[in-house]
Image (cartoon, rainbow, N blue to C red; front, side):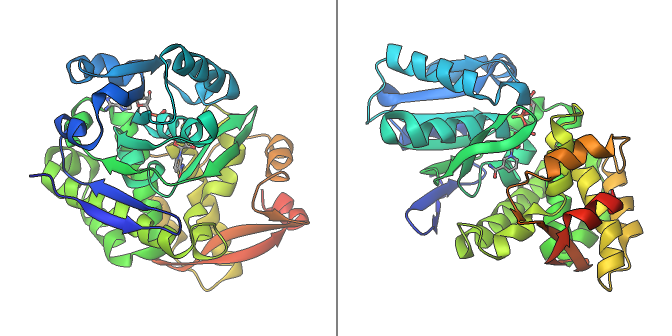
Length: 337
Ligand code: NAD
């Protein structure tokens, strides 16, 4: 029997099937009117699982989270006869859920969609919260919509084929959650290490659920990012300016962004633990600095979606587990960079 947890958002509810199996997908959505969107890496590593399903298989990578891919998927959906009753299921990492959700928002003015996240990062973060969208040039997630999926199904079997680097990327968002909201989880991460989580999949399942629920609760309270949801952007302002310019993965860019935000927290608040934060990021194999061209990064920061006139909403820490929003002027930010 599949365990279901239902979470209510402002316009809809989302069914979460934690610790489930991909085989159960057919009990959630009828294969006859379902179309899966996935990428080549996930498809080849788990080909058998996809047999009963109509699938669109994309090239993997952030560089394909763009309008040209959206156009191509829409063309294929039309050819496959997709209509208003079709259910789209994004089976993959955050690139796939962002794309599948975006198409779910716009195809025929909106059809149902669900996610089977297959990276640690998408299980704990990207598949949750209803933000869907694509990049435009260097600008991350410039176009998109906020709409919740109908369901999220976790099958930890997918993690067996996840490359080491992608495990590290997932921990960037887990460390972020701990740093902004959960000091006890931060300590747990300090006491553990990546190889232990990779081996002890049962502890990892609990860690994944704890993170998925942490993010869900933040989003439930503030779906349209008027307040607390902004805290989830810890590390992301700099990350988004770096990610597409410097060929960094999302997790790597967030790790560098968190280290930077930790250091400037010490200038703005009573925070004294930047070194502790940096040590944890490093422990999980993630970068804490990058050489970058300040002017190029500043150009992208100026068009950050979180900017208000010449002030950027920067997420800083007061202590481990407590984050807050600091408005920093563009001029000051330029100097800090
Ligand atoms: P990704 O989708 O690019 O996946 C990373 C890599 O892992 C890809 O090469 C993919 O093919 C491969 N992969 C995925 N599952 C696999 C598996 N089970 N076995 C083997 N290989 C597998 O990236 P990601 O790190 O999952 O997500 C990053 C994206 O998520 C970024 O675009 C970011 O903007 C977005 N994101 C969105 C939100 C949101 O709220 N919408 C939040 C965080 C991140």
